[in-house]
Image (tube, rainbow, N blue to C red; front, side, top):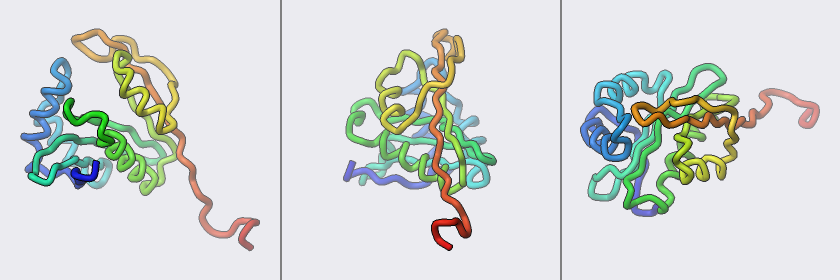
Length: 163
């Protein structure tokens, strides 16, 4: 992962991210307009990042929605030939760090039931299954596994241990 840099996604990245989205998720890819609408919420309720190679090629991207005490992983995508190099883990780490910065108490996500590699990644990060959304991914009729990870919140102010 040393040759890849994470940075905030910008509107200029949308064509490249959308192209990658279509390759990674051909049945249910978000439109460029949907991605633009997500970016419009940044930084108020959204946090989107890209993984970029030194030459400027985007090889991955991820997004988080956060409101109140809850955050939701909106998307994570990594080019197929770059999977297994730690890019997905770096993107997820960035999203989890952002959720913590926003004082979220829990992070939720949906993952395709037929994507065991993604499920293993999320489980390594402490996510656990909380439910199933039947036939969530269309038109493929694939269930979504809903997963959650609780975040530790540190006390603010005085506690018995530091008085």
